[in-house]
Amino acid sequence: MFRGVLAGLAAGALWGLVFVAPRMVPGFAAVDLAAGRFVVYGLVAFAVMLAGLRTRRLPTLRQAGAAAAMSLLGFTGYYLLLVLAIRDAGTEVPTLVIGTIPLWVMLLGKPRHLRWSALVPGIALTAAGLGLMMVSHGGGATGDGAADFGRGIAFAVASLACWTAFALLNSAWLKRHPEVAATAWANWLGVATGLGGLVLWLVAGTGARSLVAQEQGRLFVLLCVATGFGSAWLATILWNIASQRLPASLCGQLIVSETLFALLYSFAWDGRWPTLSQSAACLLFTLGILASVKAHR
Image 1 (cartoon, rainbow, N blue to C red):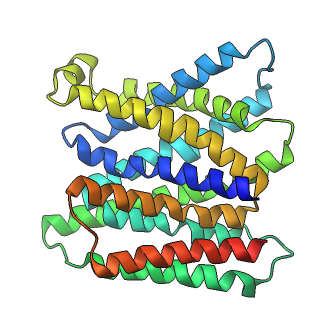
Image 2: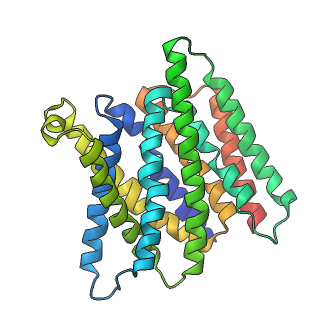
Image 3: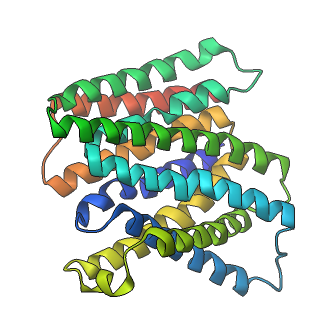
C-alpha cells in the first residue's frame, strides 16, 4: 500500500506539469500541444516495446482495443479538452474543476466493505479546499471575457468526465488482468495514444514548417518531450502501479496531488507566492489525502 501511495503521488507531480505547459507557449494551438505530447508518448512506448519484444508478448486484439478506448478517454480527449479549458479560462479554475476528480472517483469507486463514514473526513477536507481555492480566485469576467470563461469551464467539465471514467475503468481493467504488467499496459496505451495524437495533428494541427518558424519553437518541442516522456509515459506507469495496489477510491484521492503540484508550478511560473487562503486550501488538500489513506488502511 505504501508503494502504491508513493507511485500515485509521483504520478500527480508529473501530471501537474501539463497544467502550466500551455501558458509557457501561448502562441501555439491547443491541438498542436496535445498532439505533440502524445506523439512523443507513443514513440517512447513503441521504442520500449521493441526493446523488450524477446521477453514480453504483444497485446491481443481485445487488449489493443481496450488500450485504444482507454487512451481516448484518459489521454487524447482529456488533455485536448483541458488545454482548451486553460486557453479560455486560465490555469487556476480549470485546475480546480479537474481537482474535483478525487471526489467523483471516491464516490463512484468506493470498495463495498468500506463504510461511507470512513470516507467523510477525506471528502469533506478536499471539498473545503476546493471551495476555499475557488473563493480565493475571486474576480469576475464580463462581456467577451465572460463568454470565453464560460466556454473554458464547459471544456473543463468535459475533461473531468473523461478522466473520471478513465480512472475507474482503468483500475477495474488492471485488477481483472493481473497478468499484464504496469509497464506493458503503459506502453500499449502509449502506442494507441501516439497514433491518436498523430491523426489529431494531421487533421487539425498546424503544418510542420509553421510550427518550426514560430518564435518559441524550441520551447514547444522541449515541452512536448517533457510532458510526453514524464507526464505521459512515466506517469502512466506510476499510476498503473497505484491502480493495481490500491482501491479506486484511494487512487481517486491521490489525484489531489496533481492539483497541488499544478498550483505550485503555476505560482512558480508567475513568480509569486500563494495567498493565505490559497495556502490554507493546499493544506486542506494534503489533510484530505492523509485522511483518505488512513480510512483505507
